Length: 158
Image (cartoon, rainbow, N blue to C red; front, side, top):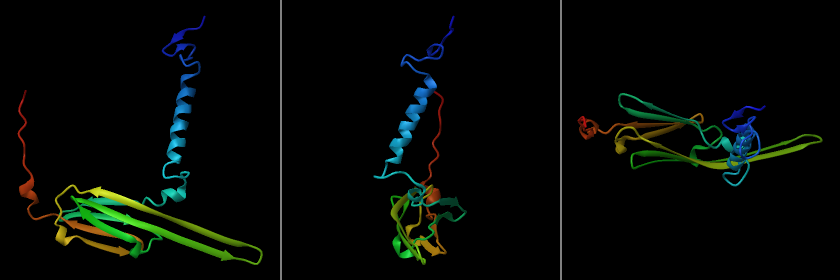
């Protein structure tokens, strides 16, 4: 005699199949939908347009570094609005190689946008950005009156 389980008899769900197979099908469906985001299949090349970003809080403010290999500094735009840093850029790369009996041409292109909310009030007049060897470094000093804008709120028992 088969023992009943949470999923019905012998591990068969009310949907008529193994619950793990159902879960697997749903996970595959979700990944298939994700691959279609952006109008095309999800590939490593498409992911390359989401640059790695590090945010570090220092004594003087915040430092943001973004790795942008293969991107020209003229194709990068940095802005600060509503205390959030936005980095935009576009990558255009073409390779062409020829041999005696072969020809190779590769093109990769795409754009990216990264918006990072700042954990502090930023002194907008002193923000600086530097681009060197494919790495963008943005220094965001804290506003001088940051201390005064913080209000401690007393927690009372109910």
